[in-house]
Image 1 (cartoon, rainbow, N blue to C red):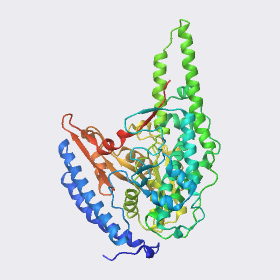
Image 2 (image 1 turned 90 degrees about the vertical axis):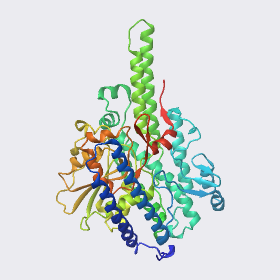
Image 3 (image 1 turned 135 degrees about the vertical axis):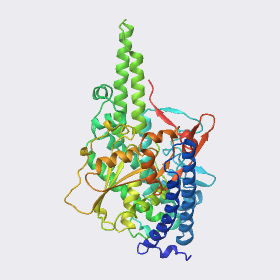
Image 4 (image 1 turned 120 degrees about the vertical axis):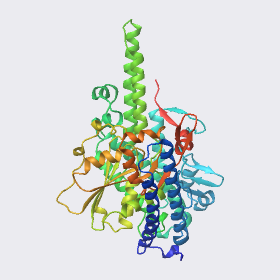
Length: 517
């Protein structure tokens, strides 16, 4: 296999990579479909588990072939585990060589983890590596809005200061050491932009916030929370979206060694009022709740009967649900190689004459796959960027299993039916039931053709028998041969239940923010 030299690699020959990857996908698609066909009507839990184990083995083998191909023919060294979190790293010698005060300052702080002589872009379990987070034990951290959002603000400003070293440089002119450092910093930059994009979209509409984040009655929301809409919300969402598209394009081109003559530029106008707004929402709401509790305590001390215990329990439970949804400190699927593979799988199934594509992502958490999807479609399949629209939809996956709680599709922008050659993509990072994809597909199917896809299959429930509830096994299996990976699970023989290994090795180390009186 003739190797393509890094210096010769350019956007004029990237279609070769698509064709080579597609061959491997086609080969394994047949193998995976055979496994599914042989086991399609299974209803025995142990046999279902065996089927998914065999699928996992085939997909793991396929991923290894893909990684070897990328390394041997294209000099792209992605030979790390795909089934768990994938991080970037840069050596302390590189940071010292760059000799830049802002970059050195960023890497000297607790935003990054150092292993021996290497700075890693993130931990497995969390991404805002503040020095008061300790993942040695499962710990609940009290949320003090002033401290938390001040840390976020400092983190953001430190990233921006470190990135100044690269601004206005041509991407092609960066050497390998500069690119290694730039990629790690871009990971952090993208990460906080995803965080705030998610936060602002969820906070942009009070009714949807109450309904989708916690299914809370309006009267209770108004009683316990102080809500003021952020001015110029739509402008901020649009600007963050454009900044993320630009950042993902730079990141991916460097990651794949694709020539890019662009100058490195970043959005200048994101100011601290977003952080002030976040801090204000929680602080004023917590102050209001404390006043309510103090009032009840005063009434009790004067001999009046109150339900202070129930009120405290309700406030704490509701607050922690809001905190978990709005301030969750991990992303969903965060493996860029896996997302690029999944995007290839999707793109190769879109007819060439389809020009207008809506890329829909359910924003119950936050993820970058829609941006990788747009990158692959524009860079590898010559689609017009202006005709690819990313829709981030605030619809809770946990509520939409009950169809009565699904938002009506009419609440979201209507496609222009006068346009021809239109398609809609519905993306998810992982699935077990497939309910999120099914429900949203049902909402959109009467507009334009829909393709629904998923990056990863997670067997994350305690009991596999629930698959039979949802005509779900058929829908689930229809997605399997396209996914990037199957996350393995282990069986607890004593309890006849199954544990997802991501949960075992990663999420148990996740620090959790809580609010307490």
